[in-house]
Image (cartoon, rainbow over all chains, first blue to last red):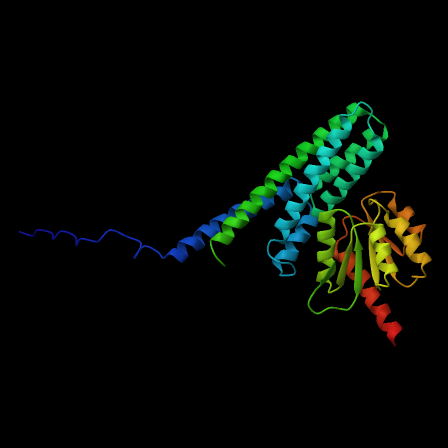
Length: 174
Length: 134
């Protein structure tokens, strides 16, 4: 009578056989890059950033600028914009609003947002103009709320972008 | 503050801009175009550099800056006899072109300035410098 032989025993997989550390890091980096690419694509398709931001990325990617250039620009923009928005809020909180100073600050924010490619923040600054030209405090407060909202959105996306870039860098070189 | 890229064209560019992120972006573009870049934070610092005898081939000015605006600085620098240096106004202000051109700027470019716009401007300065040397 034929009795089938039991299958040979196979040792369970362990780190010595199932894939090296470098290959696991490469896979992690690839997954993180996919997340980063999806984030950036979303920022473009929603109009949060425009061609100017794309140009800054191109400068970094083709080696014309140091790695970390886009992160440095984003960080500077976040710091500048935080300060400018706080200054505008303080001006609008005064019993008598100095609309010329509000104009100057909004203009600064428009310049810095356009230089980094933060399109929605730039557009919100352009929308602001009609209210300080009309010397409408209420209108300016509404416009500031929009600027702040758009800025918070792009700030969060930039911060996520930078975190992903740091995590990718931690996985090692390509 | 002076910045220099490898393979310099020996085009000396002065960037006059008070906003940090704008300064970083434009200076990076200029370095990419192989210019030697000097930075000034406002119009007065730019005027002081010329008073010290510094020479530049091109100066890019923001319009609204503390202490001294871009147009104010252009008036003072042109009054020193600096008629050859190319003066470029750069601003996000819709009404800035008139303010710059009326005081003797050679060119106005709206913000954000792109590499595609800056490249030909720098090339024109290079060509002029070569012709002047012949």
